[in-house]
Length: 298
Image (cartoon, rainbow, N blue to C red; front, side, top):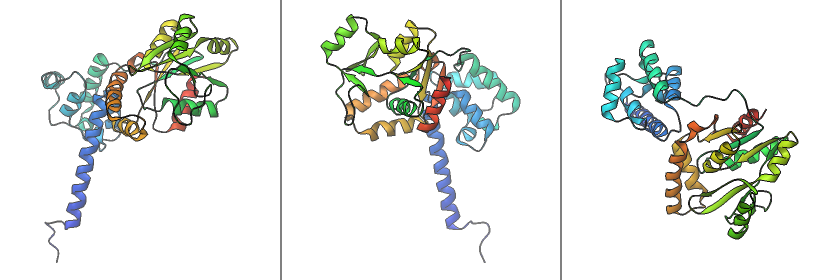
């Protein structure tokens, strides 16, 4: 007869694996919070919807210290101020505590609010390796009414890239001439290496004809477009997680170790700028993300 006080070995192994998986999921979520892939408010929403989720089972002190610029001292002050026990989990907060913590977050770390009006000039930007080009290409293929701008670059072509379709490939002298003649709507040096820019004439012609234009550019370029045309609609493309962004960058295999490390550092800085944008779209599925971007152009 089995001893009911000692679960079978297979049950203990399964429980151990489940516990390890849960810890890894919470650790991954903390990285997402720290790198701003998800907002603290989004974590609160997930915890409220499913207290058994990684967000819901995370202890409040861990949650707070995962937020950039919140150390242990500030964490403890917040817990005392809001009357939240250090042993509380985010998904186990009472209604009053949840409202108090949400209000504290909204006051100090407000989420971007969508604009009331949208321009026909749509700017898609985001961190390196997030898939901006893939999403933009999907929009081009399935929404021909939207003109996808073709950028000029001093970067050499990658395998499969076609002149005039993916980029206009120019040398430094040619790029200098475009800058000098004000032929570019925006331009920037990316990763301290190559220059990219958006030819102005095709954009102005398309907008004058009543078409919607999609620009797939980097953060520096997006800021220049916003300065030149404050009405432009800025869309920030997010990865589904920080771990997935790292996987995409390493898996692409087009950069060496030094370049990948530099791009990851850059990605963290770029993610921190998402509050400057009007909308955020998560690239968890290219067709879904492209459809959401296309909807913003309507």
